[in-house]
Image (cartoon, rainbow, N blue to C red):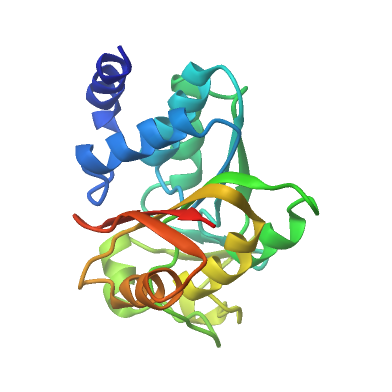
Length: 233
């Protein structure tokens, strides 16, 4: 029955753009969430295909809650304006799927989200799919390639539009940051899923190898086909 439900959800979710979330990955998310109901945290949501998959698992399990954290282009008091409003699209998708009661969003980048997380509140399932570099610091500089690719108009700051180069916030970011600040909040026996274990994203692979494969803190359940699943010891 759960496979039929998943297939129905997957077929309906094709309207949500997500080139890096194929069916086999979504199926792992869905069934892992069903088997580990409780507090689920997603780092990196964007348009919301994975949010909808996880949210439906929570809804169908009848217990638990999904918390989705993403900057959705709002960083340090300014919003990056591009051809499409990703934040609105995510909210529209959650509303369309009627998941408002089981999904809570936090429009903030990972570090600030972790600081806002209630002390002592343990996570049953953590899905990391955020900033894919290993570690970056210093000013956020948007490349000319990305400006063209995403149709970036500039930043909306204090009610005024400014060019991309006029807002370059400084903050730590990367898969290493997400792993370090969020995995301590996972309970013993809880699950970590790390997305995009792929040569195109060497930072993600490096974190998985250094922090999971070479560690005695995790038991690996899956580490192929560009997705990793591990249980915290």
